[in-house]
Length: 123
Image 1: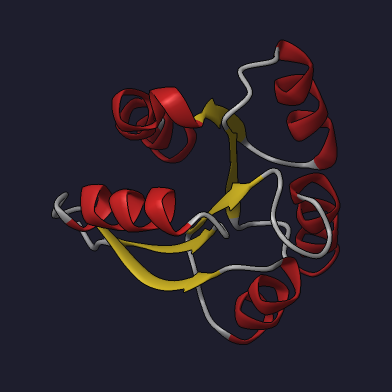
Image 2: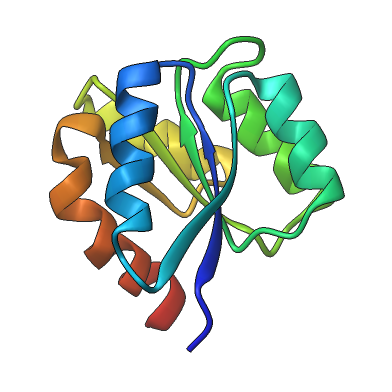
């Protein structure tokens, strides 16, 4: 099985670095690019091939919901997981309505990422 190519979009350096480390330690996944703003992410996603985008709800530029809608306007097949530090159920509903495949609160990222990826890619 080939490694999933992942784009991580987050402007929080501490979270981004620990997420990259966690993901790169799993042999089935590979962070091939990251971005810290919606504009940077949209440019990279429109010019490179990714299987998955992990997108912070509160990034610089457009928020994660608007960024998801923009990505969906030109790429319907890429999988999108939205994250945020707020575990508000309303954010999950809004994320899914915007076109994301799933929502993971950042405080549960390490324990929920692998099962979430398995669910959206392999079920």
